[in-house]
Length: 490
Ligand SMILES: C[S@@+](CC[C@H](N)C(=O)[O-])C[C@H]1O[C@@H](n2cnc3c(N)ncnc32)[C@H](O)[C@@H]1O
Image 1 (cartoon, helix red, strand yellow):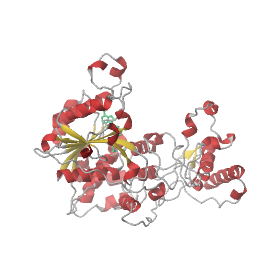
Image 2 (tube, helix red, strand yellow):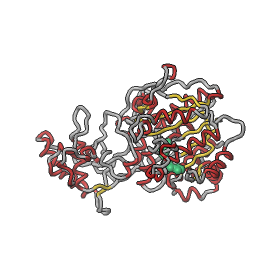
Image 3 (cartoon, rainbow, N blue to C red):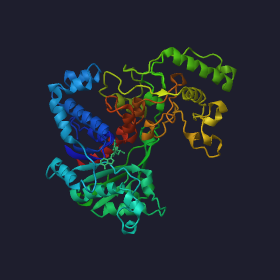
Image 4 (cartoon, rainbow, N blue to C red):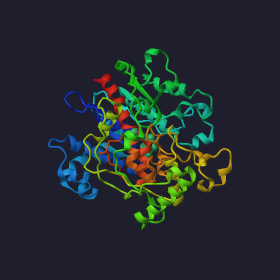
């Protein structure tokens, strides 16, 4: 197995892709030897997932207590206390380290990496430094810039470079936001500097979507538009693959474009839920149905008579652990590939699928906006609603209205917009397409749009779970990249 070190690991999206690759005998090709992450809830999620892999691979498979946990018949603590999973968690706790990478802690992280890497084996570094502060990191012209000195995020980039230079992986896969291609100073040079930094220790850089055979790569050639590769989400991220020159590896093949997959393909088969009502924890379905009926009368006023009759509100709960059958898609289609990926080794219960509470005015807005999605599949703007339904905010009458775009219905027939960690703060941008559910997306729905398999359990409180999901590289995309890296290394 090829060792993998995952740094700035988040909840492990990139790692999940690498871990999923199997050879023709069904054995895993990559073996994560170390995941470094500083945030405690993400560390819990990573640890559980590492234990999950260990238990799944163990001769005899997952023990009953773990299957009971996945079925939500026993609690995490009960499962964790069982001797049957002790070896899995002690393995996982060696693999996953809660640790803050920094210049100061460098001796310790170097030691962790040194210990984790088997001697004499080529290995892969995955993960990207989370920062927009590349702006000329560590360059002399910034030395006297006080604001730059205070912004210690740029050190993370230096840590990344340090690990490459010191430990010389055969391959690195670096993910980042598009902002890394452009400097804050607007001098357009930032990418050249990053390229220079990464090439200097002896690496050639490759894009996963534009072949290096076509000549010199432009900065934008490194952007992967996820929705073009079978991911049900518009997510545009920079992925740079570095190959150590003296390892003389062939350039990885580029990813194969796929037809679009949609929000429907990703989340339709999850149980329906109703939202909660903010500040009314004791509220009942009847309270909720009354709000829905009121919202429907507003809709009649907005959209006219044809909306006169509405079905009775669904009798729904705010949470469900039940599992609905997968949809049948042609296996060869991108939607079929996605379903197979999400449902592979499916858990016997649906995880992380609980609706949040919303203010009554927001519930009404969600109902109206989701009902008014047009045939063109565009989410209506909040200002297309009667003013009574506009959010009360000083800026609403400004011509440039920041929150004009704060409300968005994720429409059934298209890939979703980018799932970002802001989803943890409010759900306005992630309104469920079914008006009758009158709510924003759950953690599980966001996780499906991010292509986390259904048996991927997120730990921590709900806000932390949303943040984890929004931070990740879509595992299915990561798997496609990992497959290309495996072809190069095996
Ligand atoms: C964008 S996320 C990584 C996502 C991950 N690659 C995935 O696919 O799931 C960046 C992560 O880096 C972590 N992080 C930020 N600064 C860090 C540091 N100095 N040391 C360790 N982890 C750090 C954050 O907590 C966050 O979870």
